[in-house]
Length: 302
Image (cartoon, rainbow, N blue to C red; front, side, top):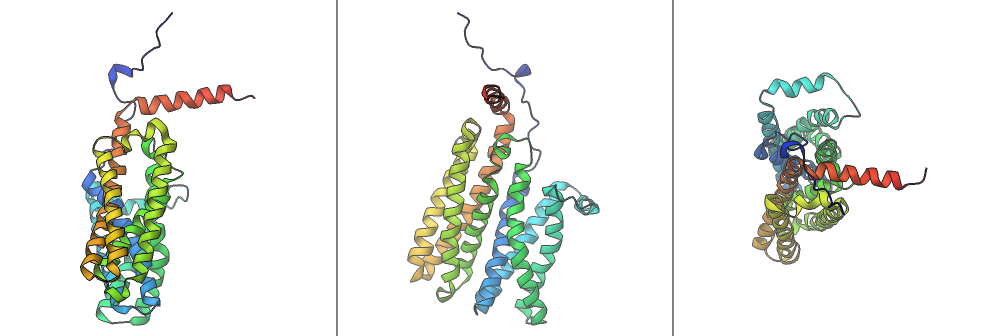
């Protein structure tokens, strides 16, 4: 006889304070850091397999990406010394602390590898730096997924199982796109294979994440975030057809496909960023999953 109660938050206000990060700085850093980390791994692979020209260009692209990404990160922090303050401690249980140290190790390695490849100086040092950047790069590409999942933002936190896989797949797609753009047709084989692996990993993990999240995954399908995510999927398809398929014979198609893959990765990162902001602003996405978890706990026999 009593109608079901409607959900209302206190004065209709959000339960959580939405993230104060700026989209161009932090979403841009999420993209550029992934591009750089996976790009260093691709560059090291090209170096080892005897493709020096392609390796040099990819290494330069990775170094430029991490430089721009860190500039955006420091700009969002407001003062450069705030980044240095994060290095005063090393806390293995904190993704932010681990990520700060990873960046401090990886960025000089990527820069050294690129500088040696361009100038030809100290080739042994450059080879060691390239290998070390190739090893630490994937960790740089992955840690940001763990970082944003380690928050109370519903769309990010509830996706903690799949988010690192989404980020690694997206980073691989971006690095493959860079490889297709800067490599000659004869040297594009590794980039094409990486594009397929990255796209499959990213799309599979993202689809699983949004479906498993239920109502919390709604921001990934609606509004600005939904538009970015759909654009990312469409651009990934274009990139695979042009870069992987047609790019075997056409340099122009390879460049077009590579650019589409990089744009797809950027759209995915911006979509994830905006979905998190939208989910924090919606009190239903904070309270209703908590109530559902409580109901399941009460229904579980002790």
